[in-house]
Amino acid sequence: MIRRPGRHELALLQGIEVRAGLLFLELGMDAVAADPPPGLPELEQERRYGRIWVSTDEEDHPVGYLRLHSVDGAPHVEQLSVDPAHGRRGHGRALLEQAQRWATASGAHRMTLTTYRHVPWNGPFYARQGWRELAPEELGDQLTAVRAAEAAHGLDRWPRLAMVKDL
Image 1: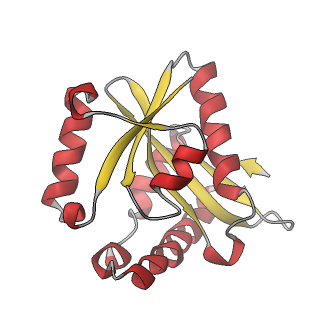
Image 2: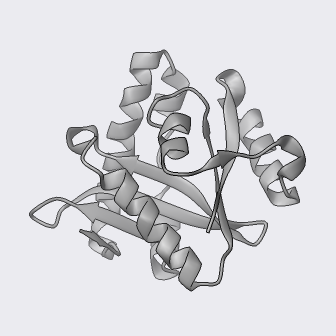
Image 3: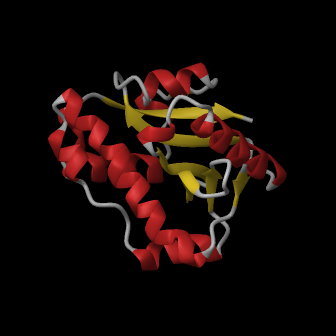
């Protein structure tokens, strides 16, 4: 089930992101695995503005979540994390589909995200969901700034790309 999280569940989302990040250790991407999740105030703000959804297990406990921001006037997937214990069961895909329904209902014509090109649960996963790579000249000013901030944070040690989903 996909739903909005309650305030009392925000710390659970931090744990989901930490556990999901541990998968990067298997790829030698220790710095990515060590990157801390957003703080509770940021998650609460996103919750209040309706820019965050959770995917739940059979007992309605969050096992994955997606956060949206606005970048260049389009919804931008800031984070999609699924607890590895619940991976490969459609939670990520369901979260993306919910975000796309919300974006379409909000009048958006596209969504964007940035991700790792070769990490199987990143670039290849999104490509299977109908996302395509944006060429550098297709990036708007804000998405260019997002990519620059990621590079400054050291994330470009591994190939990254920006992607778009036309709605």
